[in-house]
Length: 166
Image 1 (cartoon, rainbow, N blue to C red):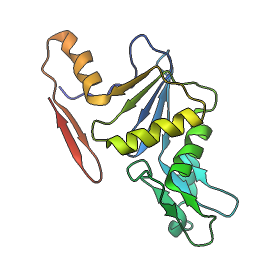
Image 2 (cartoon, one colour; image 1 turned 90 degrees about the vertical axis):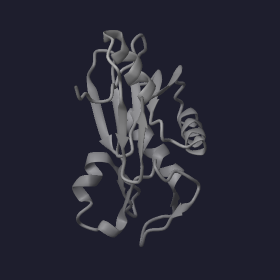
Image 3 (cartoon, rainbow, N blue to C red; image 1 turned 90 degrees about the horizontal axis):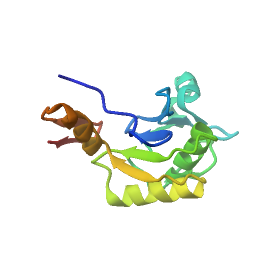
């Protein structure tokens, strides 16, 4: 039986899931918002998510995507745009997307390297988020599915790599 990755953690408030291609924010009632991890860099500052997707075709050379996958302190120098680093992009994107939601847990990919995870947590703390839990998406899927006695195989396929947890 194929299912989608869980986006809530039982017993916790709003949950922020970090995917390779998008952010998902799920509230306690189960409502979900998503924001593609895409930015268009312009002279007036970056535009994120769906708004960025809407303008990306006008000047594809100004598009930054996958900045969680390549999170770091390297500069992104796109033609005619102010100089930013990848962690700045994620920080600005998070602040714009999450606003006042105050996620109580983060769901992350099992493929996220330790260095990236450290940067991600630092960015979130600096943005004023204080998550009570950091949850591996594969472990969460297995724990939720194991209640029914099913064997779980969690496959996460990304653009650059994939992981298999069983």
